[in-house]
Each structure stands twice: as C-alpha cells, then as structure tokens.
Amino acid sequence: MKIKLIDIAHGRSGDKGDAANVGILAYDDNGYQIIKKYLTVDRVKKHFEGICFGEVERFELPNLRALNFLLNNTLGGGGTISLKHDAQGKTLAAALLRMEIDTGE
Amino acid sequence: MKEKIKVASGQGFWGDLIDAPYHQVMKGEIDYLVMDYLAEVTMSILQKQKNKNPKLGYARDIPELMRRILPTCKEKNIKIITNGGGVNPIACADAIIEIAKELGIKNLKVGVVLGDDIKDSLDEMISQGAELNNMETGDSIKTIKDKILSANVYFGAFPIVEALKKGADIVITGRTTDTGLTLAPMIYEFGWEKNNYNLLSAGTIAGHILECGAQSSGGNFLGDWESIENFAEIGFPIAEAYPDGSVIITKHQGTGGRVSFETVAEQLLYEIGDPKNYITPDCVADFTSIKLEDMGNNRVKMFNVSGAKETEFYKVSCSYSYGYAASGSLTYSWPKALTKAKAAEQILRKRLENLDLHFEEVRAEFIGYNATHETLAKKLNEDDINEVMLRFSVRAADFKSVERFGKEIAPLILTGPPAVTGFAGGRPKPSEVVAYWPALIPKKLVTPLVKIIEA
Image (cartoon, rainbow over all chains, first blue to last red):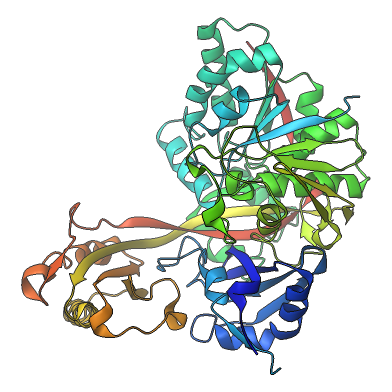
C-alpha cells in the first residue's frame, strides 16, 4: 500500500546554523508506528538528495508521536550567509511531507 | 506564593505584529508580558546602530510600546520582561524612564541585566583560558578576530530573577535566552530552586513554546491550517504556570488562532536538535519527557517534564563581517516561461564572467517553479507554467563586485528573452553580510550584573 506522508503527518522546520531541523509529527499512534518504521535516516537522506549534502541525524519523540531530523550542510552556509531564497529551511518540512511510503502490504 | 501565574508572549522576533503585546495586556488578565526581540543577526545590526549613536542599539519599538501599555501595566501590576535591550540595555531603560516621566508614572523600577556584551574584553577572556573556537567547525577565533562586530554571552533566567527580587516592574536585558524570559517569573514567583532541574526544564520548555509568538497558537501551522479561524486577529500564546511545573498553554478568549495538541507539538519540534539534550544556561531539558493533554477550548496542559543539571559553559554568539551580497529578480511569462528564465540566467552568468568579477557564490533560483523544494519540486510541462521569477544572487568579499552585479539585472529586459517584467525599485544594492560564530565560554569567566533604575 502506498501512503502519502502528508496524509498521516504534519511538521515544522527551521535552521540551526547550516543544518535544517525538520520535525515530523504523526496525527495518531498508527501513523507514528509508520513514520518510526519507514522514515529512516537512509530514506530521508535519499529523499533530500541534491538538497542535503551532509549527515542526516534522527531523533525519536514518542511522547509527541514525532521524529526530529537534522539535515546537516543543507542551507547554503546558514542563515545570514546563505543566498538561498529559503535560507532558514522553513519549507523543508513540507518538502519531506512530499514523500510516499510503500508499506508493501 | 501565588497559586498560578500567567506569562504572555508579546513578540516572536523583532518585526513581529506591533500590536500583539498591546492586545496581550488589554484583552484579558495576565501577570507577565515577555518579549523576544533578538535573533543572531539582530545583535550585529544593533551594534552598528550603537557605533553610530551611543544612545541607540536596542529595539526601538519598545519606548512607543511602553507609551501604550505602561499605564495599564502599572495599574494591574503586570511586569514586563524583554531582551530587546540588545547591545544597549541601559539606553533602552533610560528611554522607558523618559516615557514614564512624560506619562506621569511614578515609582517605576526598571531592572537592567548587563555583562553579556564581551566584545571589548575578548582578549582578556582568551588570556584567561576561553578558547572561543567555533562550536560547529572547530576553527580558531583568531581567524575572524579582526572582523568581529559583536560578541555576546547568552544569559539565562537567573539575572532576571535577581532584578525581579530587587523590585523591578520591567526587566530589560541584552542577550538573554528566549526561554529564560519565560522561566524567570516562574522561578521568582514559585521559589523554584536552582538545582530543581525538572521544574527549571518545565519553565524552559514553556519558554520554547512562547518564544516564537503565535507560532504555537495557530500561526505557520502545517496541519489543517485552513480550518484555523481568524488569523487576522490571532491570539498570542499565554503560559498559565503552576508551582508544580505544570503549565497550561492558552490564549485570550475571543482572539483568533488555535491552541491544540498539534499546534503546540509542532512548535516543540521547531529548531531543536537532540530532544533529550536541549541545552540552556539554566538546565538541560528533555523534550521526550513532555506530556501534552489537549483540554479543549484552546487549552493544552503540559506536565511531567524532566531535565538535568546545566553545563559549565555559556554559549557565546559573535558576529563578524563576511563580505557583501545582493539579489535581483525578473519575471518571465508564458509561453516557455521557465526556458526564458533559464536562458536569462545563462546570459547573466556569461556577462558576469566577461566582466571578470570574482564571486564566492552565485545562485539562480526559479520562483514559482522550484525555488523552495528544488529537486523535490514536481516537474511541470513547460506549457503549464504561467510565469517564473528568476532570482539571481551573488556574494563576494568585495563591495565593488557586488555593486557591479547590481547593474546587470535591468539591461536583461531589453537585451534578452521576451515577455519579461517585474524590475522595480532600482538596482539591487550590496548589503553587508554578517556571519555568526557560535562558541562556548566557561561560566566562571563572565558575571551578569543587575542594575535598577528608578523613575
């Protein structure tokens, strides 16, 4: 079964230096089990190919049904240096929500 | 001891809704108004203003705001805490005192937190053992020392608590953590101990929820945002805090926006790294311990927060010159809007190359097509694209290269692809780029100083 991430989760993103933080929050417990299983570091890194040039770090917040990702080397040098239109990575949570998850069921 | 206190967020950054703090004071009962005005880049801007005029260097919206809210705050005993003192908190306090005098308000105590500005004592700090290497890259501070524009230590809640203990009605600080502004009144009112890390973490996390203003009460909510009512009159968040560390996040009745599990949880995920180790000068809060309960009616209870002992270091933020940058844009319409914009980009690159200018970075973006999501943006048929804005940006060490670039945008209208418009406002002007240098400094090397000024 193919699941659109945007149907089961919302999120928020921002900057931490040259890294972007992307928080993804599932709407319910079932959704959290899905994002916990399928939003792996490798999948997220591959999703952001050509955007994130550094390591992807992943943290779990089961209490908020959420995952937090740090995308290192993503913002073109960071807040003030960056020439990017979205220098603070504000739209990257929405970019991650573009992902489709194939649960294979 | 009070049974509870209401701490209201009045500003999420300098430039946020001007009337938000006014409405927080006027539309319901609150005990404290807290306002975060400082971003990293703000400190360098304020430092430049102070260099030109020693009476400036603070958030200049503050005196006019005080004129509007001081009489009510004094009457209702609402205390005001803000880091909008920037690099000149004394001048900010003086300006407030002036306003108070004009309004005929007497017995006003303004507390000022000083000591965070270490720009002029950097050499001394280094000789005393502060390394001040870049926390992210490990580079030595020597590489940028001549270019430093500002250097400030992030203080936490305790200097503010000291000012409140000395009777301050208003507390003006320089670089204080956003979270400390909200935590301080809780420590002061409930007598929380310096080593009760669970309570300090609860107040810190409440501060994180409040520090971006309406971003926790429905603003920028990525869930079902279309169902949020009355963005136009959005209510800023209020933390109703209790002595046991539980906090109810809410907003004034009748205001727009929404406080729900989702809107608060989204803000909790904003700009954090490792959620188990949210480091502040006051404690290390654990975001995975938080329990949130949506009580309905725009009330969300936060409880069960735990945390650990603070570290031995303060964070320091230095800003330094990093050359110049400019951006220019042009809009291309159907037909073949994207092809035209891409052609214009290539023409511009060739012209800049011919001019033999030296840029550290050149970037072209296609707004309306893929500027935000880049490789993830949906591919569209050229014929389905109505228009594309080419945004072209450069950065260089020298002013002249960037200034020269600015002269190359408008000519594209008459010397490049057709059906182009949107060039207004003159040539893009170079703006100075200020980079920022995060570092750590042993706490023992820096001492916050609290001063009370009375009207």
